[in-house]
Image 1 (cartoon, rainbow, N blue to C red):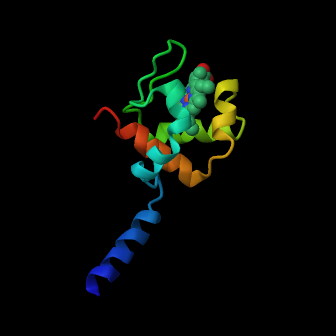
Image 2: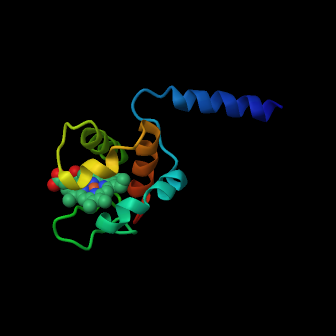
Length: 102
Ligand code: HEC
């Protein structure tokens, strides 16, 4: 019982962290199939014009994905894949790609 209460307290403390709530990398991987075609399953792109994502800072990835989704950063290749993403999906995708190659 004490462990459960401690777990709940820790979880809510993390959720309240002001800067960046870490995503769930496993959930991100499950959503990343569509990204692999262009960015590589290991986060290393095979195409010269597509950026690598492996090991990139998670907060930076979150900012770029939200910018594409919300039309603040415009690239036709990135508009469609980011349109359906929720903020939680984006946190999870960022956790997954930033954790690759480490
Ligand atoms: C059709 C190919 C394609 C698909 C699918 C795609 N991307 Fe991209 N992505 C690109 C290209 C091309 C760029 C570079 C855009 C630019 O020049 O602004 C890019 C840029 C990015 C960036 C910015 C990188 C940086 O260094 O600023 C992120 C983050 C990103 N993609 C993540 C994703 C994620 C996550 C998915 C899956 C949900 C995804 N992409 C799906 C082609 C794609």
